[in-house]
Amino acid sequence: MTPSLFGRYEIKGELGRGGMATVFHAYDPRFRRDVAIKVLPREFLHDPAFRARFEREAQTIASLEHPAIVPVYDFGEEDGQPFIVMRLMPNGSLNDRLKNGPLSLEEAARIFSRLAPALDEAHARGIIHRDLKPGNILFDQREEPYLSDFGIAKLTEASGTFTGSAIIGTPAYMSPEQAKGERSIDGRSDLYALGAILFETLTGKLPYEADTPMGIAIKHIVEPVPRILETNPRLPTACETIVSRAMAKDRAERFPNARAMAAMLESVVRTAGATSEASPALIAEGAPAEPATQRATVTPPAAPTLVATPPASPPSSSRPPTSTTPVWMWAGGGLLGVIALGLIGVIGFNLLQQNSPAPTATPTHTLTIPPTLTVSAATRTNAPPTLLPPNTPTATIAPTATLPPPTNTAPPPTATATSGPAARITGIRVSGDQYIVDFTVAGYAYGLPGPHVHFFFDTVAPEQAGVPGAGPWELYGGPSPYTTGNTLKVSSRGAAQSLCILVANANHSVILNTGNCLPLPP
Image 1: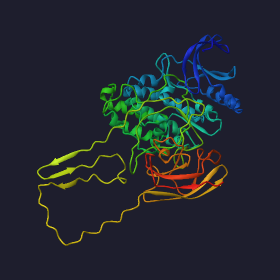
Image 2 (image 1 turned 180 degrees about the horizontal axis):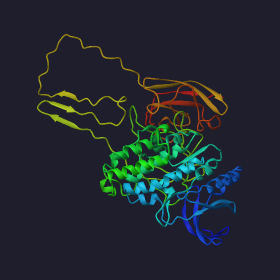
Image 3 (image 1 turned 60 degrees about the horizontal axis):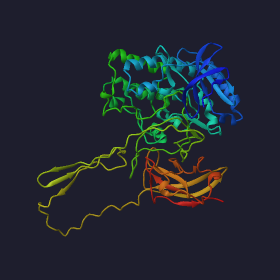
Image 4 (image 1 turned 90 degrees about the vertical axis):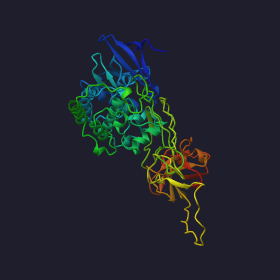
């Protein structure tokens, strides 16, 4: 039930609700103005250090003064609930506007040119947003854009799992270093998110899609920056350069600051004289009526989710489906590089559900060449060329052709068949709450983002130890030995008697009968 009062603030109604906050439209009788109140869950107060951190971070947020940053008026605690009071933004978010399709290049340049100095100002103060997305770009009554929720991600970061070791972000806009769980996040992660937002603003589509939040995050890590002109070919070619640089996997290759990115976008507008608004009808292959991802229509930070393992392209069997995502919390470190936590679980937060397009079947084409030969074209694939044979047509002699006479010449020897990909655990030892696992691999080109290995307890069926299984499992693509993550801790073994390994495709589906299990140390 919506309260009528919250401290001195008179509640007029609820603006939105997310996993980490509820936002109310309220009236401040002291200053006679409407405000927005973001109320955080009582559960945050279970963290004994939260009150001190909340006050410290809220003061930092409130000290951010810039014409394009939503100002914070007040913060405190009421009836056991922390809250932050900020300026009310009456004209919705960029997320709301993108539901009607992409914006024009000129409008995008106007928005980004106003927001860029604000972002740079925050970075100069050592404040990283960590969760830039269209839902955090709000508009006032004069249609001026503002950045909101600065510091909210950092504020709730440690309380998300009550472990102090979580990272918040929205997978659709998350930088590779955030997705990996790296702790040394700086302003360049925000610039990456800005590039992803620009891609969506100009196309109406997300840069990466997958069936799960984890799947999208992995694509940010391993897949090339998408070509924006393939989605909206009516854009100037220079837009390709802007997006590619902003979303560079190596943060050293990104723009030095947001102003540099906005200046290049303004230059493109001036040079191209682009005035026509990009519409879904102009998008290559047709744009959906709504963006592929279902988004919250309110400002509250969406709920984080504990996550692990990733998808890409396989050396064999299945390919990953595709989709999109929300805000989640990844506890305890990286998705890739060493491991990804092998379970998507919710730690006291709700994951915003999002729709995803169904994967498209791969066509096989057969070309008939008269009069006696049939050439069967190889099935098209998007897998890396090193993993699949070339599309070489095979000729078949038709029944009407004359067969050559038999000879006494023995056929040439055939190459010895290989045993295929394999992985073996050779030893397990304990270090604190983690297992140190010695292992070997053979018969394939091992290493992320390509084929790798999955580890799992014997309480998980092998079929469930990868995508689309339920797990829990952890992926690894580095050298031996491997140190288990939070999912496969000593304290979490439960009834497990052994630790197992299987070869996994790049899309994180496993190849059965390619590994072994070894008893866990007592």
